[in-house]
Image 1 (cartoon, one colour):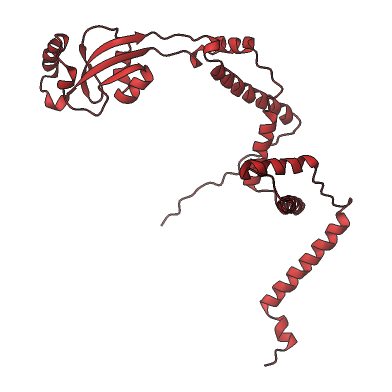
Image 2 (image 1 turned 90 degrees about the vertical axis):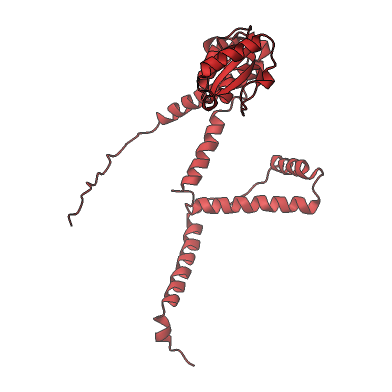
Length: 286
């Protein structure tokens, strides 16, 4: 079956192939003309050492000659594709690429390897931000739970139980079943709040060691409580929490340094923000 040339040239697929070949040839010719310097990829001795060390960390041995050659070729392949992608503008208008490049630059800008962290600096930081390092008050207590639904007169029942508890009755045998803990040891207010709620924690933290008292209410019901130990809130010394203070200090320093670097870079740009083109929304009448 013969197909005439005239009919073949009318086929859309043939048109597509001809256009594709023309674009490819044009790109190859113009790229060669525009290039001002010969393309050169240098794999440094430092990169080779890094490849070797990475291999040793994962395989627990040195790479063979063939494995090393394969890693080097992979590095060259990555560089070739990276450069060609840049030359074709594939990095432009790509939000993911822009985001990664921004993150990389921010990481460079926040490098604090040259910073010397002294005790004087950390002490000054602690004094400026005492709330970050203040130790919460701690309390150890037992509790007996009273379910609202099982006690018509919860206060009266609580009073009877308090008398028995303060006379020496075992708390494990009294009250109603509950999923919250029956006792906590040296718990902070925030830890108590996680188990019993904020209202209960605020009341509990005011109590001092002594007899059974209550009821103190939570979102679950009433509680009879006995505090056995209490440590007041305190401000620790630097040598007790130096790693924590240093971590917080460096984190803030990074943010400040990054903000200063951004502001300095931003001043070199002329920023123009065009007004939003508002398209009025109209409801069509039916």
